[in-house]
Amino acid sequence: MRLFVAVELTPEVHEAVCGVVERLRRAEADVRWVRPEGMHLTLKFIGEVRPEKLEPIRQALAGITAEAPVQLGFRGLGYFPNSRRPRVLWIGVEASANLVPLAAQVEAALTALGIAAEKRAYAPHLTLGRFRSEKQLARLQEEIASLSSKDFGSFETHALALFQSKLSPHGAEYTRLDEFPFARG
Image (cartoon, rainbow, N blue to C red):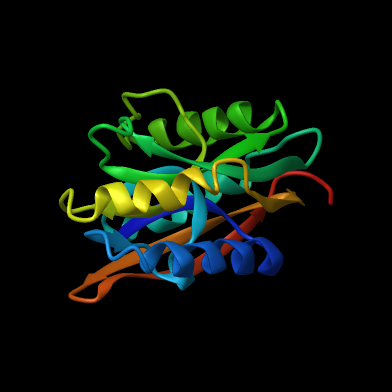
């Protein structure tokens, strides 16, 4: 089974993000857009694990704690690795100082179970789409530039979720397996 740990979006933020994605789609760029039901803030992509690892993963995530909920704000648009050779289009995440230590706790708890550690530092973002080619890129970038300071909303979260991802010809399908409160909300 293919797993990841994430924070779910509130309905208000989700609606704002979906509205912008619909606007950006009109540029007809060659982008594989994230499906609306698949939008989330990933803390850790676990990858393929055997079913017997599920319970130890749940126990590890249940032990994650923080002194306060995490504040999240979703603002602006950007690219990985850059705007000249974009591969991923994302919305920026402004978070309270406890998000990075929370992600580090998740990483450490799962690494202790033999799950490979990330090679890169955690960079919170909300993926909107992945570029397949540069077709209509200039048109899309014009639209993105007009939204560079867009505010998609904010919220406070006190829980993280474990998801299963099933790949299909229509894209990944996500199922929330469990939720783990890490702070009082």
